[in-house]
Image 1 (cartoon, protein in one colour):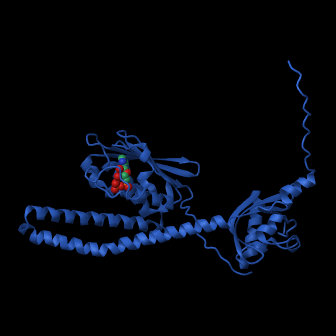
Image 2: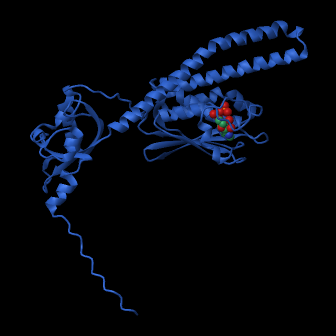
Image 3: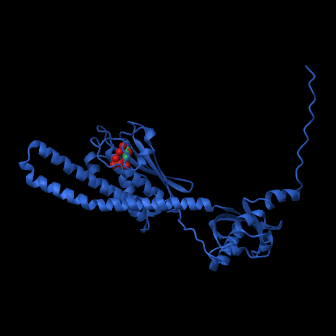
Length: 384
Ligand code: ADP
């Protein structure tokens, strides 16, 4: 064993004393506004983040009422007190809302308030941490706005396309009725192609319109029993169910707050697809099940049909995306995109599992609390 050079034993880093720790972690921190208030809501502490995020120097802050950063101004005290009472009862409260800066502009802030109690559980006051989420909020709102503009465009375009298409369809059908006999076989075939193409375009436009409308329809009265919505969908699919001798079964489905028309359409599209993409030589069996997982219901529609490659499981929810040719199976490729819009509009998500030749299962989740549509609030800038 060789005797190496003795390196000096590293000395433990000198940790700041307790009050210096407070200074580095809280008082000097600028990314978060951190402060405390007494039981009445009077501000009793300050850090650099308060100045950076809210614009108040220490002397402009201490001794004032915390409601001065709440908005709207006429309800500021009420909102501030409600938050304090909630934290007092529950131990803490969180909020994401617009707050006021000293200069009167508004910031979108994520706030976390904790009740502070003495050893004998007496309420001493509250601590609050606020982060500035304005940039994220503005980005999110501009995305929502451009999505809305896109929806509006899809709606107007498909709506206005209907009129000229109707004219072409009417005249092509008229030509077919009156003059088909006098055309030679090639002329007849050409006319057939025109008539079929206009019908298909009509279906595409109808589906596009339905897709664009899903969002605007959201505020209709809620339905409570999904069983009923499924039954209504099955009634509408009755012809196809009888024609294919399909067996459709379902578990007891939950009662949930949702848009009835949209739930019916959702089941109709999913069960309709399960019937459409059946194996030619096997009787279709379809089962709709429901299970509760934490705060959400998972509803699943399972079939024993032709299935598809799992790598396409995401793409099929895009508008106009189809895996099977128009000759084999008719369709526009918009049905699942509509399903996705409906489910996401209700605060849930939709996904699929499948293997070619082994059937498919489509799952969607719905939150227990009913619609959880993210609220779109416009940024407000106004004086105090
Ligand atoms: P469409 O049925 O009009 O083509 P959809 O949006 O409903 O449109 O479906 C998109 C594609 O997903 C279909 O073209 C098909 O290839 C595939 N698909 C949907 N449901 C099933 C299913 N139950 N089994 C197999 N493939 C399916």
